[in-house]
Length: 287
Image (cartoon, rainbow, N blue to C red; front, side, top):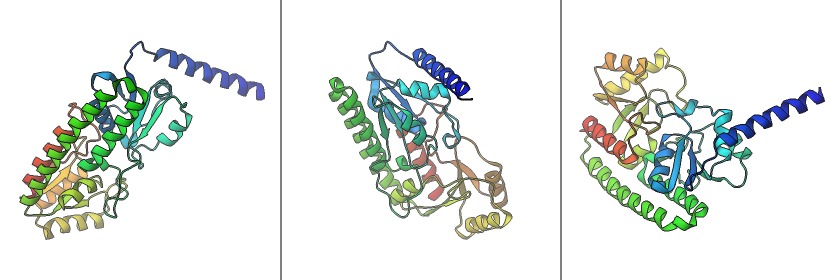
């Protein structure tokens, strides 16, 4: 049995070595891997043409359900930087990062995010522009540590992002001051950080765990909340509208709008595109 175990281990090591050889590159750019689309977009915005940025979770796939393959892990072991969100957004990262060698700069982008009672437990921190900037800055610091020759380039890109963030914050404040209502119904608990900024209360159909369909009693509570708060629109996500949301819309006469948590984008939109689309959808629903 011991001999068999040694043979199996040798086979696994050979496969990993072969995978690693297959992902080597002659590029002199930073080799950056990201867990899902929001991290990918942030990594691209800072890296520009000085980094080759790769996305592990395919865009358009639900990142909560993603599982990396052995080949994905082999690629990570050959990278310069690995960027992920944390806070439970990617359930697989603890075991994977523990297996990476010390040459890979690991960025847990939520490390310096400050939470409050309203936002604790919601990993979608980037929907607050201040948090998004904190994550962008963490990425820039990792790039500078791995590629100090291009430090000024990464700083310039971070500064440009900061300017866009400040304009976005002003536009969110303008929209907030126009809202005549301050309650929204959303498909799942993913918007507390955005709603905290604009003083809106999100009522999540599937709660914090986003698992399973609501019970008949829960459905009645949701529909009563909609009627009691005179809500005319409910929000779903771009990755798909569930039958439950369609049923709620039909029962209450609500229209369905999209509020994008920026987990994935099949159209390769960037963070700022998505946030301004969210402002437009919220303005339609709350005025």
